[in-house]
Amino acid sequence: MNQLLLANASVVNEGQVVEQDILIIGDRIARLGSGAVPAGAEVIDLKGQHVLPGIIDDQVHFREPGLTHKADIESESRAAIAGGVTSYFDMPNNTPPCVDRAGLVSKKAIAAGKSFANYGFYLGATNTNLDEIKAATADDACGIKVFMGASTGDMLVDDEHTLEGIFEHATLPIVTHCENSPMIWEAERLAKEKYGDAVPMSEHPHIRSAEACFRSSSLAVELARRYGTRLHVLHLTTARELELFSAGPIEGKQITVEVCAHHLWFDESDYERLGTKIKCNPAIKTREDRDALRKAVADDVIDIIATDHAPHTLEEKARDYFQAPAGLPLVQHFLGMMLELSREGHFSLEQVVEKAAHNPARRFRIIDRGFIREGYFADLAVVDLEAEETVSSETLLYKCGWSPLQDTTLRSKVLMTILGGEVVFRDGRVTDRPRGQALQFGEASK
Image (cartoon, rainbow, N blue to C red; front, side, top):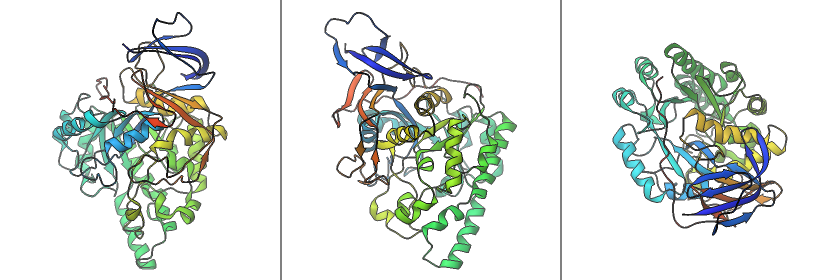
C-alpha cells in the first residue's frame, strides 16, 4: 500500500492556512500533523509550499463522444491534472447528446479507462425526457443540466410546462444556462440588418445582453422558489443578476450561483485583441460587470467558481461572428488564474479554495472529496505562490492546442498534483496511467 508523507506543508483548508504534515496511506489522508513516519514511506519535504484540496471544476465540455476532433476525455483530463484540477463534471451536449441514463452509462464507460481526473456527468434536459429526469438518481448523474437559452440547438428547453415539470420533480440538483432565446434572436436579426455578414465581435455582449440573461435567470430562480428545487445557476455574467442571490455560506442555500474564470478575468475591451477566441455564451460583458462579479466572490454572494472549459479548433474559431462557435479552453490554468486574482487582492487564497473545492463538494454532496481531512481521499494540489509561469503553446495539453491566455505570465505555479494518494503530476509532467475514478454523490430529497 502506498505511503506518502508531505512534510512542512502550508495547508490551505476550511478558511485557514496551517503549517502541518500530511500523511497519506493508500488513497486516503491518514493523518494531519506531526507523528511517526511509517517505515518505507516516501517523504517529500515541501519546505512551506502551499497545499490545497484538489480543485473540483463543476462545468466542463470535454467533447466526448462525437466531437473528439476538438478534445476528448483523455486529453482534457490530462490538462486538468496539470493544473491541479482533480475532479470535473462534464456537460451533456455531446453528439449524440447525453439525455438518458443509457447515455450516462456509456460516458462513464469511456471515462473509466482514459480519464486522468475524477469524473461526474450531467443528464441533459430536453422538452421530451421528463421521465428520465424523474428517474435519475445520484448513482446516475451529478445533476440535471437545463439549457434555458439559445446555446445548444435541440437541447434548448423552452416549453413552459416542461420547465415546470423539471423544477417540480427533479431530485438531483438542477444547473441552468440562463439566456432568453427570443431576445437573443431579435438582437441577432437587428445586428444582421445593421452589419450584414460582418458583425463585429464587439456586438456579442449586446446581442447576448444583460437583459437577456436577467430575464432567464430570474425565471429560473422563481421556478426554484415555487417548487423548492435545488438550483445552481451557472456562469453568471452581470452585476444586475447578483440581486437574485443572497450572501452568506453555502450551507443551507437552496439556490446557489457560479461564476466562470473568464468572466472574472476578461471584459468587453478584450474583444478587440482576442476576437472570437473569447466568444462564449453567455458573453463576456462590461468591466463594471466583471468588477461586480469579483466583489461578489469576496462577499460570498457567488458560491462557486468554475471554467466552462469548451475547446474548439483554431480553424473553427477563425470563422466570422455567426459561424465561430462559442467556448474557450481554460482548465489547465484555471487555478493559476484564480491565484493571480487573489494575489491582486480581489479575494483571498482561502476563498479560492472555498469556491473551487469546498463548495462544489458541498453543493453536489460529493462523498469524501473537496477538503483536506483525515479519512478523505488524498486529492491535492501543491502550488508555489512565488514561481512565475508563462502560458505557451509548448506546454499546453489541450487537443485544440491554443489558449486565450497565450503569452500571459501567471505569478503562481502548480508544482504537483496528487490523486487518490498517487503523485500524478510533478516537474511539468503528467504520469502516463489514467487514475481517475467516478465520483460518488450523496442522495437527498428535494
